Length: 123
Image (cartoon, rainbow, N blue to C red; front, side):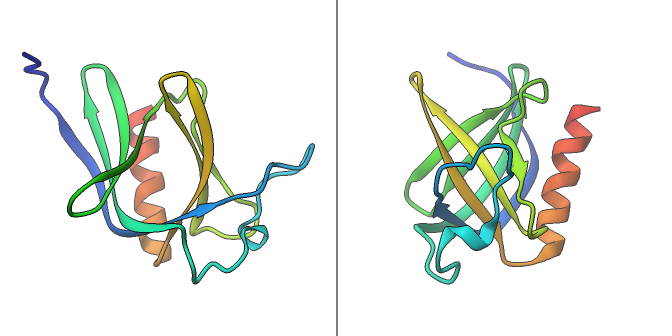
């Protein structure tokens, strides 16, 4: 039985997830390269949870978990895009497989709060 206490560092009530193209050499990701941002691959909420093992980002809707991934500040799995403050690239790892997805917030204040939650954990 896992009695580890979990703290919620941040919840975004609505985020969008996008399929993103591979990264070009020596350039960062750009949300404009992701196609129609009004037509995401998935919509749901994001929870940033902390326990004694670290921080986990959980992408979920009312019935299912879409994806989850650990956050390690030493090898960050979250990267801001170059052309917007509302979009990020997230590395999702599951059983040795990894994928990169685009994540977008509807409001800049939500993306700011998300960034602050990760920075507070890093300190």
